[in-house]
Image (cartoon, rainbow, N blue to C red):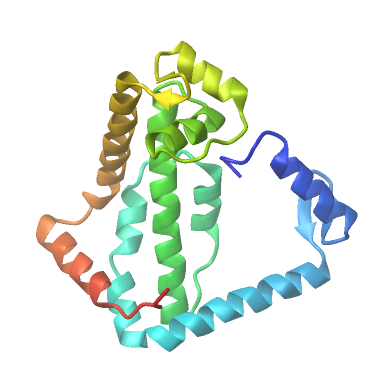
Amino acid sequence: GRYAPEGAVQEALDGLLAAGHLNREGDVLVPSDGMRHVLQVAEHARGQAAASLWSDDAATHAGEPIPAVMAAAKITDGLLASQLKAPEWPDAPHRLFQRLSRMRYLRNDSHAAAWSAHGLTAGEMVVFTQLWRDQELRDDPAALAALSERGLAHDGHISDAGRALREQIEDDTNANDAVAYAALDPAHRVAWLETLDSLPRFEA
């Protein structure tokens, strides 16, 4: 939801409420019984998929360093914080999938902290990245105008200053991430990456 167009998340929530998939309990939205069942089925499928790829021993070994990494992380985002509060799955393959998902959220959080520090909004960052990658732009004239006003874009293209800043944001993201991974000594990090790389994976 962080990068969704303005109002899109609220529109989606309103649709789920209207369809009866969510219920409002005070200030909290909770899934209906039917939606809860759908979520449970989806989570069960994730667990089955993980178990079809990874043995208990391999998953336990690969996932062992992740709690230390997450404990050392600088967390700024509520979504990641809520993920970390959720109980872990008892089955090792499913638990590894969950822990790897948390690492993905950590990268997202580190990236958001990086671009926020440079005074960019989420909408501006979406357009900025599309310019950087030479992709089709989201229809967001205000974001493009803000980037142009800062000299980060010109005539619908990224400027030299913009390219330098966008690459700096990647460096800052890596630096933010590095705080967490410093919880492991270099030899441990290398061995862990080799372990992760050796895990079977689904072919796209």
